[in-house]
Structures are given as structure tokens and as C-alpha cells.
Image 1 (tube, rainbow, N blue to C red):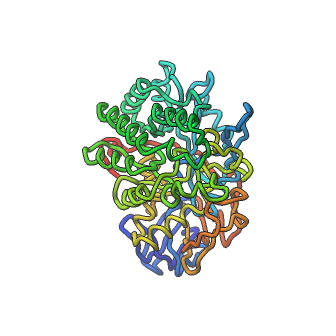
Image 2: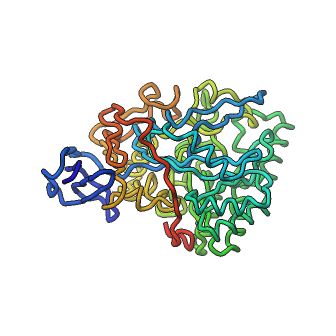
Image 3: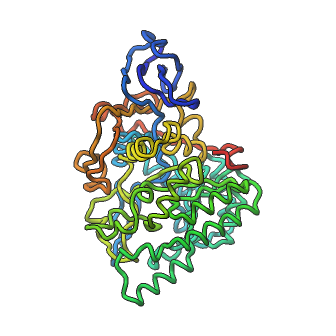
Length: 475
């Protein structure tokens, strides 16, 4: 006997989109059958007629309850926590988020993980995991600590090749330390998640624009520029290419130069994968000139029309496998607190509209098939970052993380109607769909605009990257 059957929908299965019934028992998908085949076999039947049935979205890049630098202050504000962000995620069709466990001060890697787990336990509506995040000059024992963390289910490690702004000295990991971490990850089975910008170029441009009196944030694209991405991406790629088993996940790719570097490396057989953000796909540096233009910004900067074209080209079976958010959920007053090239707040509220935005931009506007769309918002992240086939797929034995996307009527983005911040960079955007139901491991969490779940429903996810993902460009 099944607990629930979802019938009548167009289900996006690994083999493509087909009319199918999906049967759920406990927290797993237990059966997939032809339309009507599972009728009468469950305690509840959900009619998905006229809707698209997809695996729950996976946002591989969020920052919850995260320190947010405040101009002129040493005590930073914190972004909203997983309690709020995960609720917004579920309303938007995302059932899994990956945040970061920051190794800072005198903490060991394990202590950083344990601290983060305490912060999230029973405080998240959806499932979650953590990238380990290291910064600065690394103590010589850190690579071995990272290897232990990978074996413990924390399969990815974030590193910066820049301090980002002059006030954030100590973020950049020296390339010698990156080299040692890459070797450790290659041996232990992990993957490196890289924020790659050339620090010399970035800091040179801060000095240059400050000297010229062009410090307004609208000049951000000159500081965090396309040359910086070109140099940093290729330097990291060359490092990894000389370490057998070294795999790269390039965070928030923003420029055509980054797309080109990833594509070339993949063509050479390097196991490298590209993530971009929906901001980079839909906004350019010209949007900084709009009223409250800070709402569109994250680091690296927005770029130009030619970068748009390259990023979209990369999402079409190319160099870009995932679309994330770099979620920073905070009130508008905090997002607008900085207005210079060296103090503007990065990240923005976007986890709730992400799935529907990408459907609209890919399927409706660009003719992508439903499998391509699902890959970008769910499946690829699951495969690359060690969650597949538990997450990111509608298959027997997978978690019953299921979303019904209703395309029968359009949806207009209104911050006042959503569950994130008091603003949205997507305000008034016309979307071709919106989730009518979100299910997490067999439990209906959101239905017809109402929250049904509890903060205790979210669980931590241990991850292990598949060997094929680390040995070649498998996704």
C-alpha cells in the first residue's frame, strides 16, 4: 500500500518528461507507473493535471545567519537564518540548500562543522548540507582536517583567491595552500568550490578608482572585472590539472571569460563544473544605475551583455551546470547600507522565485526542454556535489522531494507576497509558473499557498561525490 499517489501530471523523469503516476511510501518514491496505473493504491491521491512534476529544487549556494559587514562598524549584522530562508525555499519549490561551515579564529574544521550543525538543528524546514569554508593562510594541518571532513560527509570545500574588498583582508587563500587542499581533496574524494578572482587586479582597480574619485558602486564592474575572472579561473584550472583526481566547482561564474575557461578545461578532460547565479543571467552592470541599484549586486560584480550571452550559451549543455542564488536574506535597509565599490552588500533575496524564474527564462523564452531546466535547478547540483540519486531525481528509491509546477496561470513577483526579505530584485517580473505543492521526503510542506511543515522537518545531508564526477566532466 502506498501513502500517496501523484497522478495526471507531466513528470520529468531521468528519461525525459512523460505523463506518469508517482507512488510514495514513507519518505521515498516507491513506484512510477503509467497514467492511472497506481489509482486506488494510496491513502491520498493528488491530482496534478495540467502541471509539471519535478524533483525538489537544490540551491547549492546560500548564506543563512551569516555575518554581513557593516560600513564603519566592527560588529556586523547577521543575515536571516535557515528558519526564514528555508520557508521561502519551500514556497518556491526548493527542498535542499547547501550553506557554509566557516573555519575561523582558532577553530578546527570539525569544530566549525559542529558549530554550524548546532545553529541549524531543528531550525530549518527543508533539508540541508554544508560546504566547508576555509580562508586566509592555512595552518599546515588543515588539509588533513579537510580529508577527515570529506570522509565524514562534507564533500566540498570553498576557497577564495581574493579578499574581495580591501576591508576583508584575510579571506584569500594563498595558491600554495590551495594546492595542498586540492591534493587532499583528490585523495579523500572531495571537490573544491572556488570563488575565483585575481586579487592583484581587483585590489589594483580599487586603488585606481579611489584615486580617480570614482568610488560609487555603479563602477563595480570595473573592479571585479572580466580580466580578473579570466586570470583566476585559468590559474586554478592549471593547478588542478596537475593533480590527478582533482575536481573543481567554480562558484558564481559571472563573465564570458569564466565560461570560456571552464569550456576549454572540460574539452581537455578536466573534471570542472560551472555555477552561475540568476542575477548574472538576467541583470547587467547597467542595472546598478537604477534606483536602489545595490539590490542587484553580489560578488563578483554584474557584467555586460556579451557576458549574458556567454552564460546563457553555457547553460545549454555547456560550461554552466547549475543556477544558484548566493542567498543573502536581509531587510532592504541593510542591503542599501553601502553605496561604494568597497562597502556594498553582496548577495540578495532570491531562493523563493529561483525555480520559476529559471523555468520562465529557459523553457518559455529559450525553448529548453524540461530535462534541461530540471538539470539546472536540481539534478546537476545533486550529481556534482554528492547527493545523487537520493536527491534531484524522480526515481524509485529516491527521496520523495516533489514539486508541482502550475503553468496554467502566470505569476507576478511581489515581495509582499513572498517569505524572504521586504524587497525583491525580481519585483513585478512576470513568471510562467509557480509551485502549487512542495513535498519533502513524502510530507507535503506547502500546498495552495499554505505552510504545512515544521522547523524540525529539515535534516542534515551527508554527501559523497561519485568517482566519475571527479575523474572527468561527467555532468
